Length: 177
Image (cartoon, rainbow, N blue to C red; front, side, top):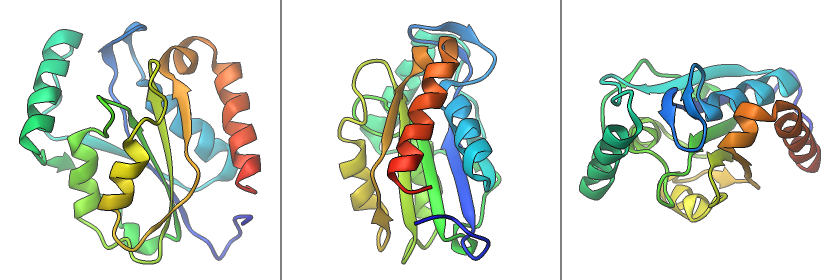
């Protein structure tokens, strides 16, 4: 499945800087680091899925708000958009929050027609890997083909970027990119 000039690639991701679990205050979110590694390796366009109303900078208030959103099935407004319909392959990145993707990712998903798209998930986590996120995404991405995902520990993305890059490269090679 080598990418070529006829296949348009989008790397869409949700990522959060500020105070994060296990890495402290950071300038660039864990998932953003991995997204940039993917885009650097295979090309394609990057799109950062961002809430219009950012989460609080501090970790505890952030997770409290994110958990309320999840329990309510909220779909927070997001900044901008990327026309998924114009792409063939979409790498979709997110942190694994309680076995699911952040609600802003669902906002992004529900704005688009995924019919016939190849979606390749990747996440950052602090011990839970992909968890149930691929099952959740399979339900939400109507008509898409979901390929093998990648999970990178957030601490590795922040503090061991050579190891994270090797994981990304090996994964992309397994996917034949």
